[in-house]
Length: 469
Image (cartoon, rainbow, N blue to C red; front, side):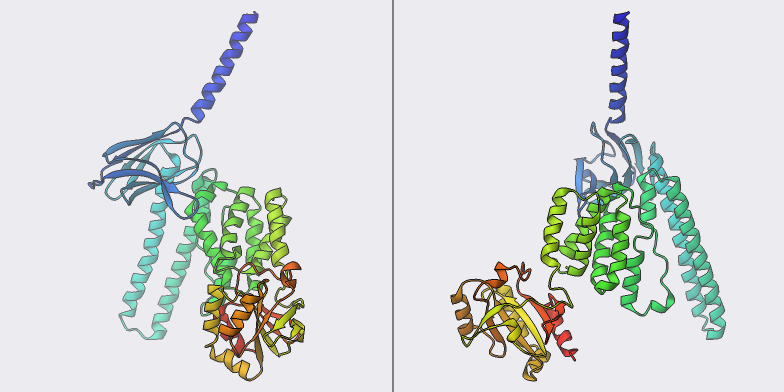
């Protein structure tokens, strides 16, 4: 009896092992090429999660070939290439459904043994039908225009076309939602949702680029599948996040807040999705060297991440340090005072330098970028006129310890129309009064040293100066 129990236990273990093995048996994708083209190499490619396609497997060209491995493919979008030409695209949603055939014809691709990819081909075909219907409306409109009808006769026809276009768009959205729900357990369902077109903006904002950008930012994630972490490894997600970040850059910070907070809130649905989204936005809006850095938006991101209960200790420590550095000297705040030595040898303070406005320019005299900026600014007509009218002063501040550097600068490169100074007691660095991780770094301030614009850029100076009251 005891031996029988042992035997049954061994059989159970064997069955479990066999089941696990069959559920993770790798991929086997049979490719049949009938497009009459020949290539040197066949490639199985996928997206690297950043910006490039990478090779998963390559082989010499053959009209019939099988890509296979004992290790399953991660969920994502894949491509079969002949050399550099994409022959077809397919989706992988899970570890199980990775054995199927692809028949690549001259003008179509047929999937056998893959429910998801067969459905994807049908879905694409239906979208093409909707596109053809909309193109037909354009044809009808152009034909009617050629008849040179008066406006009062053309207008009813145009209204009818617009009604038909609206119905086609509505039918398309209904179809997409239906298919997304039907394939909600597959990557296909999330892709359908995430690529649905934005609703048309109100007619009255079409002529205003800023309002259009704001509308786009606010609606970009209306249908996005935040819950599905499989989207992380697709170019769809990466490209959408990049577009969102650059759109926010062109908006006023206050205008960007609502769109950004809503997107971050949506991303809370899945920690992996959230931090992938955060990291991509940080590269655009938060990194010091990014041309699209916006400190106000980055501060909002950091505060959201610190309030998110899924943020781990490593990230939390870094975000707290980042926030401590940049959440200071913001627009509207009063700058801290510090001691300076002037070109004539007098010691004074920032607050003692009086002017209706000031361009406070932190620099290292020998820094190539600082030198380039100085040379560019010396020829700015609005700035020079404002200096001549005693409306503004430019105060350069060298804040490191080497006095010889400052003395050489005064002799060889200092602009005589500017005030040039040195923080001789190293107060700025010792007390961490400013976050000067990059130089040159400039503030535009008023007579009370209240910040009008933090981190004003070289190409923004003239516009700000000419609009000063």
